[in-house]
Image (tube, rainbow, N blue to C red; front, side, top):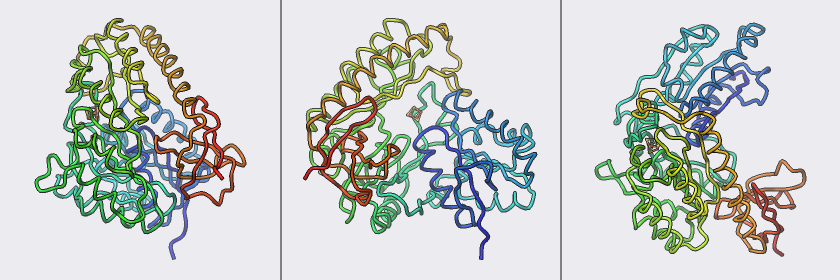
Length: 440
Ligand code: SF4
């Protein structure tokens, strides 16, 4: 029998990392590790890292410094780093951080059990080689956890777009689409375990299949997933505006299981900045997409990403980003100050904007978006929504779930409803979520 040990897993950054962490937990369960929320009790600490912004990277180093003391007190504890910082730094991390035991890159998740078992014997290793595409197709880690009614399923990884600010193509590698037969099989298995909602996940999800001869295109994949018995809801993220086809827009009118939400990063509202970012679309093209989505699917919720203070962004450019927020009426926006990343093209651009000015622009943008978000959330008041109940809320006595438009609803109701689809009247729209009551 395998002796049970405790795993403390810290996840930084994007949904892809959250999904990878679920797979890490599944892989390490096979060699006797069970998750804990208390790092001081752990036998193994893993940091699944993000290097998309400098701040996320700094956080990883700060945590590693903190764990030095823990390792001194309990020398047998193992510490590993995975994800994008691991990919970027590789062996250097082992050289610079003597209390670190192993490092694994973005293509090496499948090697993790071996790395941990070697670390248990005292071997320090870094595995960060990129793997050729044919082998990668067989190595996509599958989510074998059993909890939850809503799961993410990776359908593609990597990116070929080389937006001038983005480190992803360097740390996640080039774009590859997973075999559709494997995806459909994984989702069928999830449905058999009681999963009702799947989100197809990829850095550039709507370019799925475009570069793989004989593979399904994204729209056909979506249609086939929606036919799997037991799957009641379907989502996908993250989409690139330049690959958002008319056929994909029409899916929102034609496929009842496809949820009324799209995450569609604009990054900026000015054509000069979009061009310097190498985004591959104009403001007008982006707004036309949004208009088409709202026409085929009235009430569709749009979320986005915005970068503030990109090198060369003038006050006029920034005003155009603010006006984009007003025109799109985003449900929510993830906004960040531009962060210079190694190897990227924009790292060589002259950055003339002061940190103070960048912060002021971000604050102005956040204030505007908070107002739009609250107005949007209030617009649901009195409506009846289908909610998939995901769990018990942190507010005592309540459960929570999501409407089709991806807003979270808290409901005072019996926890036995977790996992069920229920009808809810929205009683209040708050800043970050909705309140609702079960319909009779
Ligand atoms: S599309 Fe652009 S921002 Fe998104 S992952 Fe690819 S390079 Fe990065």
